Amino acid sequence: MKIQLTSVGLVVLFLSILGHSGIIFAAERKTPTAPEDILKLKNPVPLTPEVLQEATTIYKDKCIKCHGANGNGKGSGTKGMDVKPRDYTDKRVMENIPDGQLFWITLNGSDPDTTEMEGYKKKLTEEQVWKLVHYIRSFAP
Image (cartoon, rainbow, N blue to C red; front, top):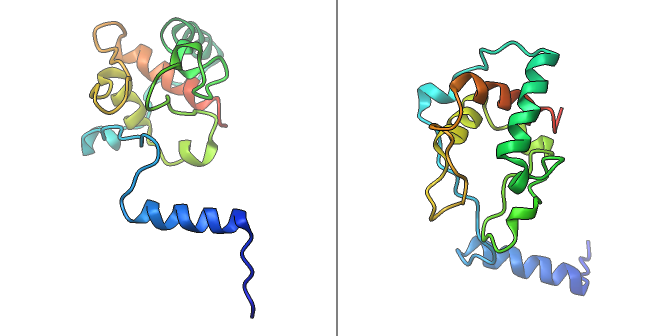
């Protein structure tokens, strides 16, 4: 079998080799992970139209600037950010993030050296954050 590499193929091969050698081309997402007991939590708030309506209001007030109106992480507040906000529309990614992680990171935020995610522990109740988790999940059903 003969393998023929195009110029695009060579660039992809080169970049993958460099990426595996530890050279980083763009800022990587280094979101802190919730403690194990929090990761295991399931959303205790029942999903209802009223819950989604309230969560929509919270999202518009607290999240839309960075995560965008459709949850793709391309809001107006992302200009100049080294690490862009999470794209909630990426179903493959979202399937691998437990409810507990979304809950925890929304409450606690990230270290400013890793991402610019602000924590909302002092601004939202735990129930509001769980409602927001439902809304976030609605971007990648």
